[in-house]
Structures are given as C-alpha cells and as structure tokens.
Image 1 (tube, rainbow, N blue to C red):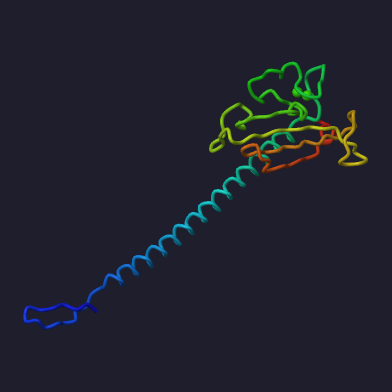
Image 2 (image 1 turned 180 degrees about the horizontal axis):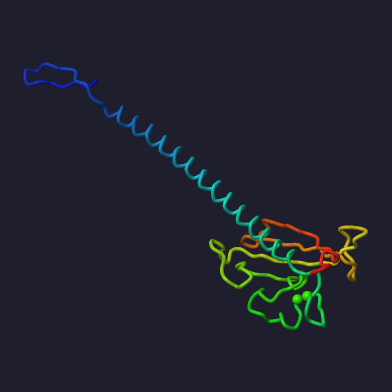
Length: 179
Ligand SMILES: [Ca+2]
Ligand SMILES: [Ca+2]
C-alpha cells in the first residue's frame, strides 16, 4: 500500500507496489529463473550423457557383430596371416576383410563403416580399436601363442581418448564348417 498526497493536502492510501516489494519480487523471480536454468542444464547434461553412452554401445556392438560374421581363418588366399592378408593390406576400408583376425590392430578415428563411409553423429573425438588374440579353448580366457581353434575379439571405444565401452566375443574354428 502506497501513500499519495492530494491537492487538498489529504493523504490517500492507494494500491500498488513499493520499491521494497518490487526488489523482493525481482529477487524471487530471479531465484526461480536461476533454479529453472539449473534444472534445464542438468537435464541437457543427462540427455547428452545418455546419447554418448548409446553411441559408444552402438559403435562397439556393430563392429563386433561385423567381425563375428567373418570366417575364422582366411577363406580364399593360400598364404594366411594373423592380420591382413596380401589382398587386404593397404586397403582403403574394411570391405575386403574376410576373416576375424584381419581386424587385429584396427584403429579408426573417427570410426567409419566397412565401406569407409562416415557414421552419422560420430566425429573424430571418437576412436574404435580391435584386438584379436588366440585363446586356449581348455582354459578360457587364457591366451596362447599358437592357434588352438578359438579367438577372442575385443572391441574398445574411446571418447576423447577415454575408454568408454569395451566389448568382446569368442569365435570358434568349428563354427566355420560348411562355409
Ligand atoms: Ca583375410
Ligand atoms: Ca587374416
């Protein structure tokens, strides 16, 4: 309630906001606005983290699935190698890869599709690597120095050089029978 002095020197109380009330209202509104902005910021950070986690999982799962589809050992070339065979060395992309150990030591930043095309939403802050090792089928997951019919494929995904996803699978030689 504010006071107004009239021409006849009478004082009348009129409805309205005093300066103190206005300042108080501004403080209240400002505090509420800041709280709302903080909530919005936290929500966006959570959403961003969920998207990043989904991207990491998808990058790992899609490549492991691609590798598990390949033959256990080189199916066509007569000289086989633990790694890329002659026709695959220096290839611009993974389209010639035909056995699981062709992927050994693969490291892509940004990760790309098997034909070399870029992946939507995946930039150079991402990196995807593969390690293939021989495993002792009688003592999984112990590694061995020579092939005993079991390989472990490890796919790791990094975001800004920090490991964010690690996924592995085992490929047996006998599952190639008939292929
Ligand atoms: Ca090959
Ligand atoms: Ca090979």
